[in-house]
Length: 302
Image (cartoon, rainbow, N blue to C red; front, side):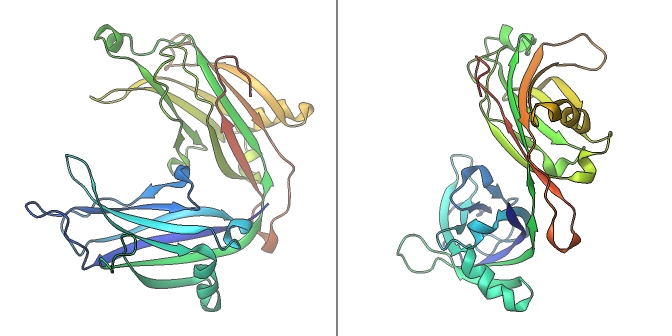
């Protein structure tokens, strides 16, 4: 699969529509690509600029070449005013990724641009400035990890005694890289036997995959209004997972105990995974894997 890295920096906005008369406007941006809600990212809130906020906040993406060359793949940046009673929509910018790429390509793939902030067909509600840079085209090998379900672990007993429903949610890390942290939705019904049916995708270098110290870490938390409570976690070496699945065509379904320090098992977590074929990357760049974690239903079916 061919893809490119995209580095997007939301810089600032000017002369935005004032949507808060009494209190100060505190503005942030939500960013979507291709209408994919899972790819939503957002800037911090600007607490001082009001109708002229500034962020200088950088987001990084991996974009498939097919998406990039499709005229319908849109970059959407929506601006909101932060409020305790519900955030208020200000306006948005829509731009096709292909047009942004074609504009920046003669300048080495990077550009700084201004676009009007619009609400439907209404006149401009101000302007938004952002910069972007497309990286070189990569060929990646496709790898898939599928996470699944957890079974019979002790989930926040003290909370359940307070008549609150424990709502488990895993965080997933690879190689200790916080930037690669991803999480499933919260399971609100399974309590101590949650199921997620959720897929996460990663790009992993071959060097990482072959290093015994590169760990897959899945941490389970109970969602609470007063602060999420840690349940336990699973640690597994990526290389060991790869070596185990290799004789089966790179696929496996596994169960591991959920541990909390040196304490006894807090239950078990099930996930399945699949590695694809290795491919070379153009321009001598590192070979990468794309991994997806799928959390299956209560019956364990993928």
